[in-house]
Length: 174
Image (cartoon, one colour):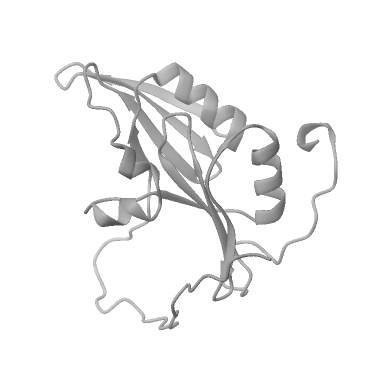
């Protein structure tokens, strides 16, 4: 029998933005520092379906970078010489909460069960197995460098995707 977990409460507020601002706003990308740029490019391509949009560099920092894109979602990967490695507590979704700052990259999927099964069968490091609470289903994985990624499916009708349907098997997803 699975261990019962307390996921707390969720109160839907749906507050409208309090001010009308003279500009539009949306997320553009999430930046992730990596120890090996080429290895990370390959991981995001092979495991999450991101394509390489462009490469970048900034000699004054210095870093080499790459923007990866899948649809409207972008990730910036950057490699700096002599960067500090990620502390072990940052690799766990629960202990990482004890450190201030950005916690993880969250990506919405249309079918969490199918995504988790495919990623698991392709050797992706699982940080937290699937859970469901408050109309949301999720899990946490780690990229090839230990960065936490949350995969999230809205099962309450509030997400970007329609309710889950099993994917049609084809050569790419088998």
